[in-house]
Length: 74
Ligand SMILES: [Zn+2]
View 1 (cartoon, rainbow, N blue to C red):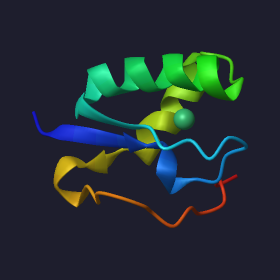
View 2: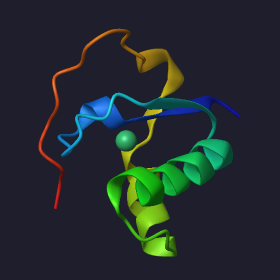
View 3: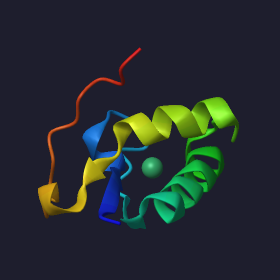
């Protein structure tokens, strides 16, 4: 299974979060959901995980350093 990226730099956030999580999809989803709850005030729920899953990117698209943030979708 290919590894995936959940990249907080990709989206605008109140605290300009720079966390990037890379790993197997299930690992990334777990870590990202916990992080979203702990650092961004989201509620860890199946719906949140579904949204996070839709934002995952392939590992080989990783960009080091700064990344231009986009507005959160929806
Ligand atoms: Zn974050």
